Image (cartoon, rainbow, N blue to C red; front, side):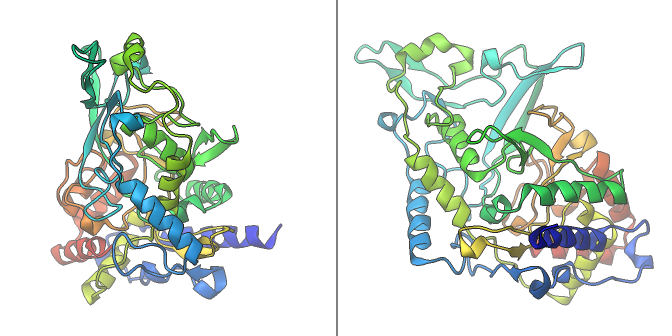
Length: 419
C-alpha cells in the first residue's frame, strides 16, 4: 500500500473512531475531548491556515494563484446580460446575487424544485415540462419592435405533485473538499457502516463529464456533482442560462423547446473562460474563520460528539496532493462527511441521480453562524429548530439532544454557533 493511501486510511479511521456518538446523554458520560483536536497536524498533514475574514482567499497562495482568485472574484460578481447569453430563462444574473452576505456564503435565496411521483412510486422530474429546477426569471420581450416573442419566468406545472424550496449553498472552503480523494470518502462510508449501520452514509457515484468516469459526488444538496469545475458549468447553465462546453444545450422554458427559435444568442455563450474563472474563485476561497471558542463552546463541542451529531457531521478531513500548495495534504474541519443519509421526514421528495427523495448530503456546518435560515428549505431559524426537524438517520441524535439538560443544550447550540 502506498504511504499516502495509508495516511488517508489512518486519518479516516481516526476521525470516525473519535467522533462516533454514544448511546447515553452526555450528562451521564465523561467528556472525551474537543473535536477540534481529532487529528494531530504533524501526523496527518498541516492544518489549513484560518482565514481572517469571510470571503478571504486561502492563506499561503502564490502571487499567480492570488491573481486567479481575484480574477475569479470579478467573474463571480459580474452581472451577465442578454448580450452575454443570459437566459432565456434563468434564476439570477450573477453568482454573487445568490452567494453573498458574506461573500461566498448564502443570503437565503430559495429556488424551486418540482416533479411527480406516480402510483408506482417512481419519481418523474417532468423534464419535458422544464423540471426539476424551476427558473424563476425570463428575459422578456425579444425580436425587435414589435417583439416576436416574450420569455416569461417558468411556473410549476399542474402535473407536479412534489414541490420544494432549496436554499443556495455556501461556497466556503470548497477547494479543500474538491481536493479530498474519492477513496477517502468511500472508506469513510465503509467505516461508518461498520460502526453503526443505522447512521451510516453512502457515497453518491455520479459521472464526471470531463473524463466520463464515475466519481464521488460531493457538491449540491444531493451530492449530485463530483467536481467544482462541473459545479461551475452546471451553475452557469441552470442558474444563469449561460451555455458552455460541458453544458452546451439551453434549457427549454417549461419544456417548450420550440421557443428557443427566438433565443437572442443561440450560439455557445461561454467558451469555458468564465466557467474556469468561477471555478478558480471557489477553489481558492478560504474556509470560514471560527468564532470565539469559549469554555461553553468547548463543552458543547464534546456534547456534539457524544450525542452522535458528529456521526454524520464529520469533524475532520484531509486533502490529497494538489498543484496548489495551500490545498495540498491539508487537514480541515468542514463538519460533514459529504455522504448521503436518509433523513426521513426531512427529505424533499426530489430524486437526483441515485439520491433518493428522502436522502440528503450531510450539510457542512462551517460558517453556519452567518445563516439566518437553516435546512434545505429554510424552514428552521434556530439551531434547536434544525435539530428538531431531523428524521430518519438523524433522529437518534435528535432524541438524545431532547434528553439533555437545559445547560447542555445551550452548550451544544453555542458550539454550533461558533462554527
